[in-house]
Length: 129
Image 1 (cartoon, one colour):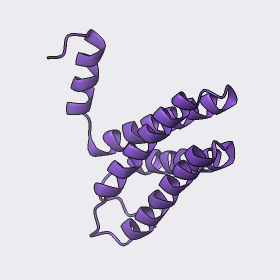
Image 2 (cartoon, rainbow, N blue to C red):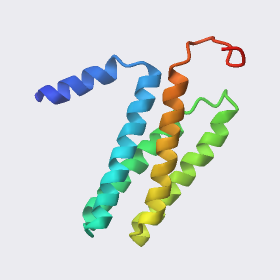
Image 3 (cartoon, one colour):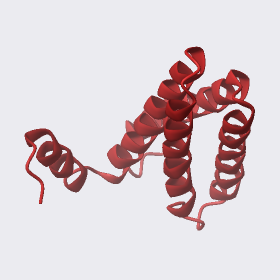
Image 4 (cartoon, rainbow, N blue to C red):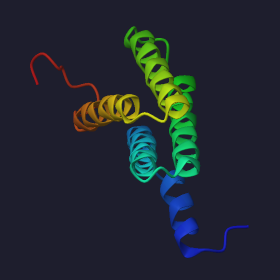
């Protein structure tokens, strides 16, 4: 049972969001956790690093499983998401910033791309829009 007003709001916002808004929420979460992991690396709090990298990986895994493979781009996105997860795993094993920063960069670029795409009205001709 949800009792916190914040949790109620969060649940409501998820239930009433469009697919593009949900996608952006997933990216926001993965980005937030990746940044928290980088903060953990800065202060050598490896429990924080592990917890947040695993949370980022879980979100990226969700992105992989929800891909619509009727679109050709989905295969490329799946490969990129798998690479991002690989970077998170490597960062966690090596306690290295470089891989986490690279993964974070990809997530931020993807989020920006999807945010722009969400602004295009459905059915609009992209070549002449």
